[in-house]
Length: 360
Image 1 (tube, rainbow, N blue to C red):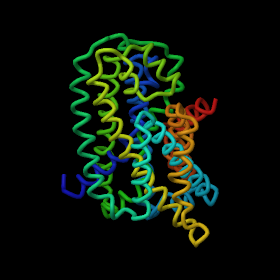
Image 2 (tube, one colour; image 1 turned 90 degrees about the horizontal axis):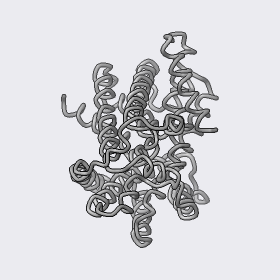
Image 3 (cartoon, one colour; image 1 turned 135 degrees about the horizontal axis):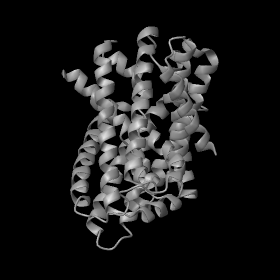
């Protein structure tokens, strides 16, 4: 791989890996390991396929953003649906991130609040060194956590469990593969080179896939199916459950450290992306701080008012809004273009099924 390709692969992986992984073991705990792995594999393949579909559309239309792309393929209504889904997706994710940080002391959350506001005011030029520090901490915490959790083996959530809970978990799995909005940027950075783009999307999404599998495996070894189902009912991230178990204090501490880095990395990236987009849409003195209020103030306030929304907001984010962006709109665009294969209709039916199950 050349240096540029490595950077883009890392960028795609970073977009997909985030706080959604903390909800995966909890959402899939009642299902059992093998059905969970099959579901993760199927949805990985589906999102990888639609990622390549979007990339092909970008190459054909030379669109520099997804609203322009869907305006060309689906008309004004397609661009409008995308924009509504895009901003609502980011808002739900921000609520989930702030809720996932609920175990932090209030003073720490307030300090983080000011950091995010500062970065929003300063823009992307201030994030480089800070993001490198967070990424390094994320990798170290992940390695230590996996090592500690592999030493624990309850073995009670490893088989096949209650498959009726699988429908609800599909939306959280989708939330762990959210890289599609970055595809136009990826295509531009790789100079619209089809072969390099194909490699970047394939390799970049493999990292989140194996990452999700590892976290799921070690969580299922450490916690029983009943404990994970209880965490789902209470809307808690997986590592919050470790804090409640005797003899797992060290593992729980590293789990909290890992959660912090995973959530904060995603929180800052999504906040800056959404804040800049809102700033472009709303300008002028009356709207000067509108992007800060919507991007930071409102999600933080919702998380304080309803501290158990972590899993539910991930479900809505993945099952409805990311589903529309990463699955439904790309497949409808391809079907409308009359280049569809039988697989496209099958996948569209699958994404619509997840959408319906999430709403219900």
